[in-house]
Image 1: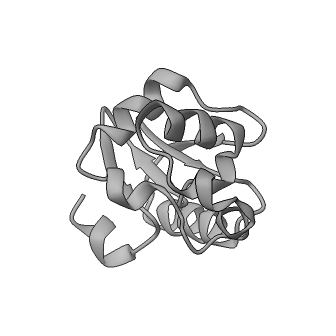
Image 2 (image 1 turned 30 degrees about the vertical axis):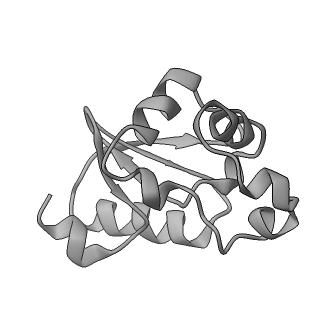
Amino acid sequence: MLTVYGIRQCDTCRKALRWLSARGTECQFHDLRRDGLDKTLLEDWLDSPFASQLVNRRSTTWRQLSDVQRQHDGKDLVKLILEYPTLIKRPVFVDDQVLAVGFKPSELEGL
C-alpha cells in the first residue's frame, strides 16, 4: 500500500492527499511530527535516487540551522533530520521504495 509521509498541517500534503483520493488511490498517511520517523527507513531514503531531493533547503527550519549544521552529511545528516523532521521535503510517496518526493501531479500520473 502507498504511504504518504508528511505533516498534517502542510498545505502541499493536504493537496496531495486530496489528489490521490480524487483518483481513488488508497494510501496511508504518516505524520512525521506525530508518528516520528524510523532511522533505518530514513537511511534507506538517503541511499535512494531521491536522496538529493529529500532535504528542503527552502524551509524555515533549514534557514534557522547554523552553517555547521547545514554542512552535515552521512550519519550526522540522519541525526539532524531525526531531530528536525520538518527538514524533509514533503510529501514523500513510498510503496516498497521511494516513488516521489514533493507533490507534482505530472510525475505521479505515471506511477
